[in-house]
Image (cartoon, rainbow, N blue to C red; front, side, top):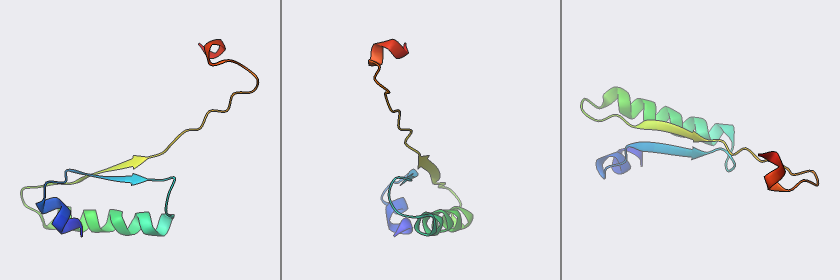
Length: 65
């Protein structure tokens, strides 16, 4: 699938760390690295989307500024 997406113009593989598990993410990383090793003129970047959750403890958002 990585090859088909790359041939269609994918430049970045975005991994949403809020979904899936480490094993599934590692498989994608390994496939992208394999593609990059074999590709002569096209490289796919890997972007990890790590969401940071901020909890407000009885404060308004303006009091954080």
